[in-house]
Structure formats: structure tokens, C-alpha cells
Image (tube, rainbow, N blue to C red; front, side, top):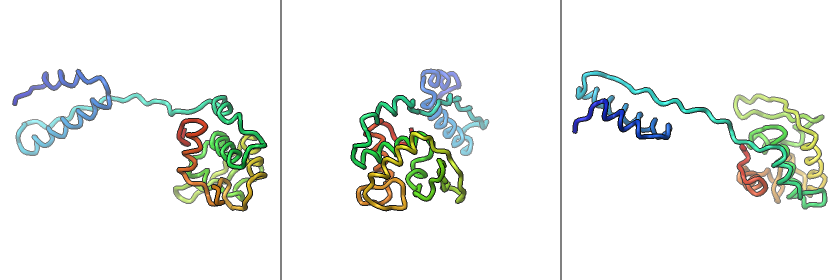
Length: 178
């Protein structure tokens, strides 16, 4: 089969999605690299990848979050109060889910949380909004067990990432990262 540059350009111009286009370009570049190494073509060349525009990360507005947890009040079960506190804590601090789940009660002081960073064993201090602090205090006042961790499951063990995912999915229909 013979193909020239106009055939390749015609084929590539028919692809609208830039990610798909880049996969095709990668395959073509790999083929021509293979052909060059086997002396099947005289020139070595590489087609540049298409630029993919960067998109903003997904996020929720404060009103969406407050509406989703609005039915949880002080008289709710400690599980619901935990869920409310977790959601507001994640939103108020911007912590990664793994960081939030590793927070211990001793890490919170005067409206700040000391966060152990996963990489390099460094620490940072992050402010906590009053709304999240209030939700945490409500939750802790009803929590029936003692644990060093802030967010716990029914057995008083540290809450798992899967449980946190299920909580945010239940109330907000998103992952904790959003």
C-alpha cells in the first residue's frame, strides 16, 4: 500500500476530537520511527501533537453544598452529623480526601488544622471555616466513641476512602475530590 503526505493529512483532518487525533498521531509517529529504523524511509520525522486546551477542575458552589446537607440538623444521628462535618470540612479546608481522613483530634487547634502532607513528611497549617468547625463540634458532641481520628466509622475506626466516597456521592453526587 502506498500513501503520501496528502493521504495522511486527509485522514487526520477528518478527526475532530483532539485527544483522538493525538492517539492517531502517536501511532503514525511510532510507525514512521519503526520504518526509519528498518531503512524503509529515508527521512526521520515526527508530527507534532495537537494542543489540548486545559479545562478548569470541577467544583461545587457553596449554595449547592448547603442545599444538599440542609436537612441534617443537630437532632440527626451522629452518622449524619459526621457526614455533614466531613463535607463542610472538605469544602472549607480544600484538603485532599486522604489528608482529611488522617486528621486526628489533636491536629485541630484554634480554628486551624495541622496537616501531615503525604509527600516528604512535611506539615502545613490550614484554616477551618467557622461553619465547618460548628459542624465538627456538633458531630463530636454526638459521637458515641473515643478515637484519635476525627472522622470514624460505626466501629470507631478511621473512616475509609470508600466510605468518604459513598458519603459525598450520597449527598452531592460527586467524588470527594470535587
